[in-house]
Image 1 (cartoon, rainbow, N blue to C red):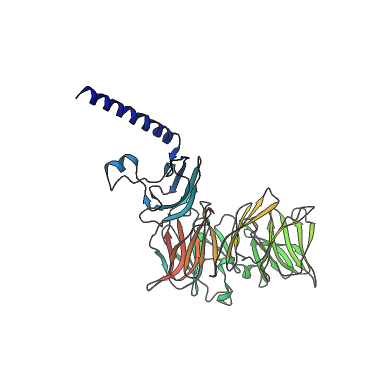
Image 2 (tube, helix red, strand yellow):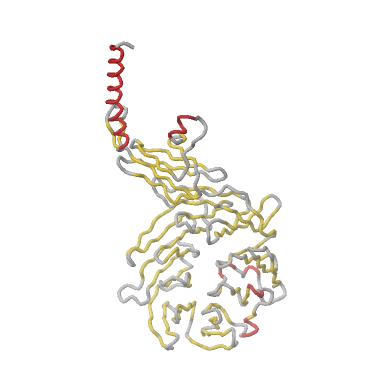
Length: 459
């Protein structure tokens, strides 16, 4: 090689160095040169999913690891969790795919000098339902403690064990369980505090002795109503306009209140709350059971009310004729009525002390109590189909809801609207329940010729 050629090659490499070094420095510090040769500050996308291992596509282009992208055409996909750096600012169509799971897709904006996070993304399984129990069930409910199933099948009340699938039956056809089957609503059953016993109509069932329930009408009398738990061994009930306590161990009753007209009552921490009415007025009254004295009387709009969500610190009064929920702090000196929610279904659920999930026939909402006083209401979806039920997922980032023959989920990330995924579509689908872990859905459906209670693994 001549001296001239060497000089040319030397100068060439110097020029390459001078050109490439600034570009590498810009790239390393988060800059790129745009199409108009302007230097742009880039952004980053940070992705995490449950389960991990999802393939990532941006604007229909599957992302690959840098070195594997050079040496191979088919392998080396970039999988979640991942951080994608040096993205030009703008809108990206992000697609996450994992075999055997429903895909996740959303348009997100990448901003210069900032990281955009895709966190708490649950990729739910696209699985096949499993038959738990075959039968034409009128209704069923899940015990929140052990997730055993309590179901009505024709004239039999079944307890289906979720561990060994053992089925215990109680035949109420010839008993005084109910005069009419349509009076039995398992949505209104009351579990004892330890969740080992439950009240259905006038019977107390024990999961450990399912076939021998306690018939309260035989022990107490025919006129009792509104049976409720105090603790695991004490129940309270109403007989006309009297409220009694009953000790299940001693089998003794005690009259604790007599009034003119009691519409409903609850027991909370040694306090008795009653809804009482006269010809033109309705009142919320508070009684101290330990001191046996009256504490408070709050006037309400004249209507018919019932107590719901007794575990919450606020009194939840449901005006069922007008579908209105009143949230009341009876001991507030300034404003006992904290909030009124109109057009709300009775089966609303407190997710925690400050967050309420509720719905009506066409909308799903979340109410947030901020700093114990102000209230924020957020609309999650509004649809033309009738919403039958809405359930909070244990990840705190999803709501499952039921419409005719379908189960859908809403992801609670409102960037570019809420993601909605249809999990399943089946004939005669009814009564959805999520287990505590959030990895399993129970429902009633007909698949082929098999009708009954099914479970579906979603995680």
